[in-house]
Structures are given as C-alpha cells and as structure tokens.
Length: 486
Image (tube, rainbow, N blue to C red; front, side):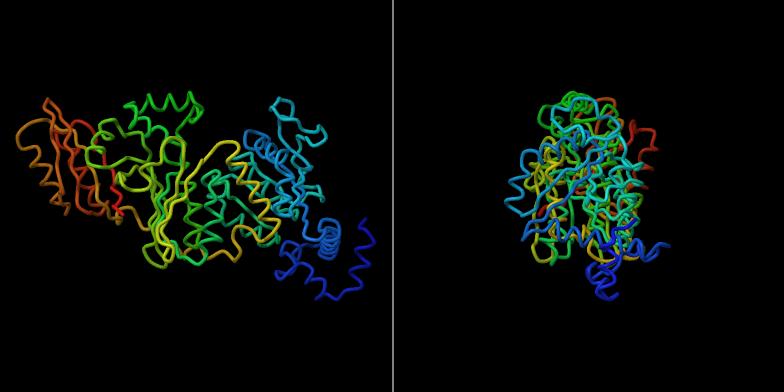
C-alpha cells in the first residue's frame, strides 16, 4: 500500500505542478513507460516530497549511501567517511550517511570497525532500499557490475563508481539509462585515482575545446620504466620488483599490454571530444618489448621512454587515439613523472598547455575521488554528462596507418658491408627519410639506431616488415614514436 499522503498531495496539485516537482527534465522516462505509471509516479512524488522535508534543513543536505564492494577501495571510502564526514559537512553542508555495505565476504577482518547491521551479502537489499539515494559500485569488472549499476539506476538511485572497464565498454548504455531514469552517474575515480581530471574537464575547462591529451595513466608501467631507467634493471627484473611491492598483479597483462591505459583513454577521450570513443578503436601496444638498450639510447638522444595514452583532435569530427610507448623529450613536463605517479598533460584552445599530477591508484587517493563525487552529486544532481549523448558516428578515430609521427627504430642486423645501405633503400622505397643513424658496436649482430623524419605509420610498418624479412636481420625491429618538443 502506498502512503495516503501521496494521494492527498497528488489530488491537490495539477499535472503540471506534479511534473515540475521533478525538475526541468520532468518525469523520468523509465517511469513514463511503466505499466504502473500512476502508482510509480505518485510513489516517486511522495519520496521526493518526503526527502525535501526530511533531508534539507537550510543549506544542509543528507545523502544516504549504499556501498557495494568492501575490498581495498571500499574500505578506503569507509575510512574517509569515518574520519572526515564531520569536516565534509562543515565545509560543504553535505551530510554523507553510510546506510548499508554489501559484499560476498563480510567476515574477514579489514582493520576498520563497522556496525554489524550495516553489512549484508545481498546486493538487492541495497537496490530495494528506498532510503538509499546513491549506490557506490566498487566490485570492478563487467559483470555483475553492469547489472548492478543499471538496476540501481532503474530503482531511482544515482551511481558513483571507479570502474573504468565498465564505463569504457558500456558508456552509451550507462548514460542513456541514467538520462531515462533521471539519476546521476559519476566516475571521477575511474581515471587517475585521486587526480580530479574528469571534473576539471567537465567544469573548470568547460569553455575550452580540448585539442590534445597525453596521459601517463598506469602506475605499474610507469614504475617498471622508471626502475629500468634509474636502476638499470631489465624488464623482467623491474616487473618482479613491482609485484613484490604490490604495484603489479600476479598476472600483469592487463597493465603491461596497455589495456588498462586504453580503458582510461577511452573515458578521457569520450568526455573531452564529445562522443563515445570505443576501446576497440584505440590502437594499443604495451611495454613488453622495451629493453635496457632502448632506455640507454633514449637517454643518449635526450629522451625518456613512457607508456602514453595519446588523443588529439584532428578536425571537428575526427580524432587520433592510441596507447603505446613513446620517447618524450627530457625537458617535457611528463618526463619527470616517476614511479607509480600518474600525470595527464592537456592542451586547451584557451587555457593552453597544462598538467595534472598525482597518485593514480591506491586505497585512499581513489576513495578520496569517490567521496568528492558524492559531494558534487549532492550539490548538482546532474551527473558526469549533463546533456543528451551524441550520435555514435559523430566522432571517428583515424586509422593507425594514416597517423604520422617521427620514429625511433632499433634494428638488430648482421655487421657486414652493405646492410645499412639495404635498410636505407627499403625506408626510401616507402618514403621514409632518415634524420640520424647510430651504429657504435661491433660483433656478429649489432643494433642500428635510426631516427626518422615524420612518416605515416602504415608506410613505416610496411618498411619494417620488409626489413625484418632480410636474411641479415636477427630480431624483430623495435619501433617507438617520438613526442614533439614543446
């Protein structure tokens, strides 16, 4: 039975007055389409009316939270709320009230004290709880995270998440559902951990057209490349050290193959350029073929090697988006970003170049971003994207073969007369001009280092395939693009 107050209130107001209570967007589409439209509408009206009376006192706003996922980041959220909820309310006027916590394991000690009645193993108890305003999803992955997020939205709850994989794959479905149900969706923690990059793009830089993005957004890869550069470790040694220190998973493929960076670049590009940039459209290459030799030659040439997520606006409807190792000039701001730290270097048409730097992962930095989203949601209630989603085909990603850059090549060739001339001839055949060449070592097989002038990647890949087919070539050629000096 619905509370009689709802019916009494509905009878006193016109349809227009009822609709206005839901704000300028009117009645959520998921309610309009329901077979039980009148019943659900009156219930929503009653809930809104009750919340307006009970949760707002002057400028104070209370947000009731349901937390799904009580792992590392979930514990971080609880720690921050336990320590700083009073300070947050004093600074912002928002009272953050943790109502329920759901996890499959609610018995393992986590080093924090939580009231037993807050804990449940049943996610549906949070989704069905009319008292809960916001669901924080922190279980990660695609499923059941997707089902939980969509179910929460359809139950009239806003959602905050740190789930980059979910957002990059189901971008359109998530935002379409949020719009239809009149709820908000926030995901600051999905990119850059504690770095407020998403809110900066959507708010502080809203007057700018973002032209370029260069991101060091995977701490595992940055730690490995830092140790290879500073301590002379080879790749496997640096990876084992990262795993020993908790900076890399037992199976590190998601990180070292560039997939994690691609997820984050998909999100940053979609927000910056105004249309969904699918993960599949991003050319992705990891760091597994980088050796100490490449690190040393980069230093000699005045560069530092980093794994970058790069996106550039090429025209109103076309961008470049790729993830790969890149040589950055030593005087570039990104070159000094070391260990597990993240940084996003951006160029806006009005603001010019800028860089955001900080801890890109970890319990408390990520939890800090989640709590920031909760406060923003309380004040704005509009969500990450405040307008209708653009059509799928508005923004296209240029094919990798058509992308132009300068390149570093390491070719392992037999030390014999005429080999360099053969290599140069093949490069010339594909229109690739040599800027400089280094061959210092002697032996049966030696590294030949070539820097090219700007060339199309398709031409370069064709040339490398032909070069690697020569009988005098020992290993596959290593190719790294160069970032232009600023």
